[in-house]
Length: 324
Ligand code: UDP
Ligand code: MG
Image 1 (cartoon, helix red, strand yellow):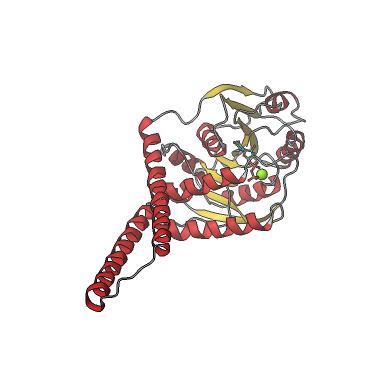
Image 2 (image 1 turned 90 degrees about the vertical axis):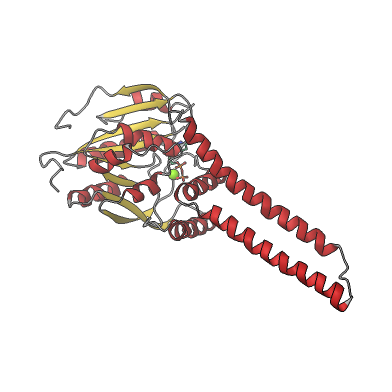
């Protein structure tokens, strides 16, 4: 592709880290090997999402032969999606690859992404053929969710992909113009379009340490994704409301009919109680749906910065090669 420098392209690995001191030594070693194996300039941009363990000092001192590292630290924990967003904003390379710190997104696959990018694609995402690392419940819920998301939002969103992907410079620039407060990065990149393709891989388990994505956060991420790409839940609430009102109107007609025509009043309160609880539940649920959209609007209106950077650092052994 014409806008990839032909002499020595620069690819930056954007890695959000949150309390990852256990996995960092293994990661840094793997990255050093990866750097040495590539002809491109490979730099790393760590985004420290408010870690409270030794993550920062580990990156600054124990780089295990790695060069060309930048680290920015948030003032507190802002969340994985915000950390990825910041990394993409601050990346100054010809392409960025977003990957997890725990080696679940293997550098070898990143290398394949770089090859495909050089063939002329702008977005190369990792598609999980198999997931060795998670239990059946998570596997099934994730698979159902991705398909649901795709049909619900009517967007050409790839299924079975997380945030592990390469994006080219033009995509990075377009991404900067998206000012959403609660970004759902994989959705936004699908929304941007460009030439997209997949590389398939088997997702291994975490190299060390524990997941930073408990079920509650996973659930929030899923809801964020739906709410930021579709207004359908709101329309569904309206349709359901109309359907129930029409149904109960017919029910009322039937009750009056039996009373005045057949002169047999329908008795019993148990069914009434259940109906009241049921519709109370439906109403609360949709108040919640409306509330969550309202909360998003409120966040947008406040227009706060999405993240606050406490400090930034750069390793002194920077490969100045042919950076942009
Ligand atoms: N992460 C982050 N901020 C958070 C939670 C996670 O930056 O609040 C990082 C974490 O360090 C890792 C990546 O996001 O590099 C993915 O997290 P994790 O591997 O725990 O998620 P899982 O693979 O279990 O879904
Ligand atoms: Mg992980």
